[in-house]
Image (cartoon, rainbow, N blue to C red):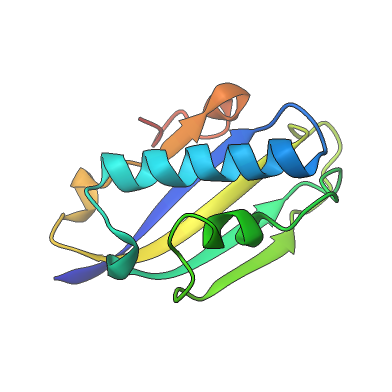
Amino acid sequence: MSVRAVRGATQISANSVEAISDGVKELIAAIMRANSLTPSSVISVIFTSTPDLTAAFPAAACREIGFEAVPLIGAVEVDVPGALERTIRVMLHAESSLVPEQISHVYLHAAQSLRRDIAQ
């Protein structure tokens, strides 16, 4: 087993607790499925949110889906003019038998435009 980093992002519909929670849960579930991971294989998760998302912490939603024992942290993304709004990004570190080229980075909704080079 090696430590691997998995990237992902999603654009959510609104700055609300429900939209942030639903977006995080959808994104994390997709990353876990795509890379055959379980919460026990996850070492840590870093979330960033665009400055327009203030209604909830993304990490709080992640704790609701089995990540209670995983270190989670959130930060505000750099406020670059013209950047995609209402976007949550994630970098998840996990133990995996996959080689780097087999890792599936997951970008959902309009966030697919962020990293066409590595997105699924």
